[in-house]
View 1: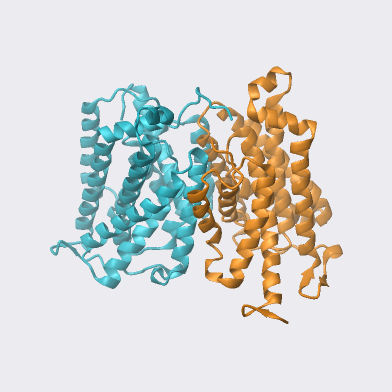
View 2: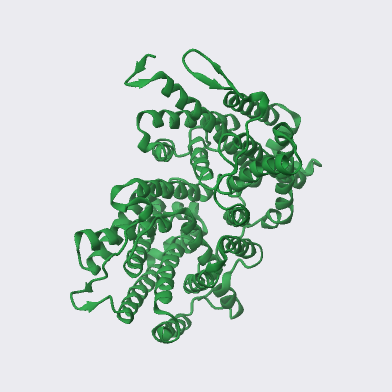
Length: 324
Length: 295
């Protein structure tokens, strides 16, 4: 099989990074999210924030290492079950439930990642999809997940013993803090020397190998980091929604996070956040249209791939020749 | 009846037969995926959706036009093949020169559209499709009862698989096809219309999926989501077999169907996941797949 050297990669060519632009954009985003609950439903915003972190963590892998995972729902869903089970059955406080669940998702990431990175490209996508389907069947059959019913009525409890999460506005700012922590962690990872090597692997893996980097280790580390951060999103989501269900482990959820990232802009820092808000808002408004939502999502997929590959943030960044 | 390891031979052979039938579908679908991958370098995510369209096509032909199963077996793959060629010409062709993962994303979007549309009009429940009169009834083989239709599915799909293998490996057309897989630019220089061959290949690959859909219609009910979960298992089959060899896809398909059937007998809880577990083991031992070439 021939190797095409001229093929356009999944992400836009690296633009010159302007730290100041990113700082301004970050401050604008944070300010908007702080005042957002005054004009929008906090519950909707919290859902969107969880999905935004989910998409950012997914983007860490696809946008910066070039690995398109089609199974990231397994980390979101499994962490949701973990945190719901720990909070409800074991009665642990929410912060421990969330942290433990995120570590649990990371542990699943070690096993699945070690298997998936043995193949590249399209095979990687198929393997992650198949492994996540395996986790789905496990969640369907394992007794602690309660099958079709899921884990209901998860207590929100008091974080650190004094922050009452059943108060909605308090919960919102806790979720915002968790999102910002995850977002900044990803930003830090991307701009570290480690992140530079990840980008080198994305651009040209054989060359990175020839420079002496053990690329498999870097890919696995990125995979586990991504899985853990997705787990953080999933665990938080279960505490917010007070339930964990099969929806979050299903392959359609893996497709949704791809869509969010694609709409916002693959390989952009703010793209997944924008994409997540757009898609979650769309689902909210179109909830009454039943299966048409699936059709519309499919149409957006096709349109994005054919005509709008940079995504919303990617297009803006391209317009101003900046990296966002 | 002689029990074997506490399981009656009747149940054992019954499940093996079911496994073999599933294996036939795995083989037909993974064969189509492999043929498409060879030429287009994309994984056709819409394969499961087009398998479903094939089954629905048979249903419509019977309900609306009164055309029976035997007509459906010919018309349905032609219709879906044509649909596939339109998809290739209007959309997939525009992705030439881009990262191959875009092809995956595009066909995933198409699968969502197709499945969503059918779900809107037909819900999620199954529509019945009767076994053709000529193939009703069954044979008593002594150790088990073989329904005629199931025997037909196994034999017919085996014939189609082998015919495809023969066409690709032994004919002149197949030689062009294999050459174009290796080096499209060079084959074009010899005056062969490679873009048209790519279109026809995609059409042929999805026609195989539609054929599997028609074969499945009387066994599994005709449902909008009949291909959605099925295709993920087929992906695992493809990873296990590797897409390098046509014969490899066929053998792996039937083999994994049999293993799944055996698991249903001895450890039913794992029957949903056994293929994924095998995939994990194969990735550890032979990352390129059983019949794959190392990249």
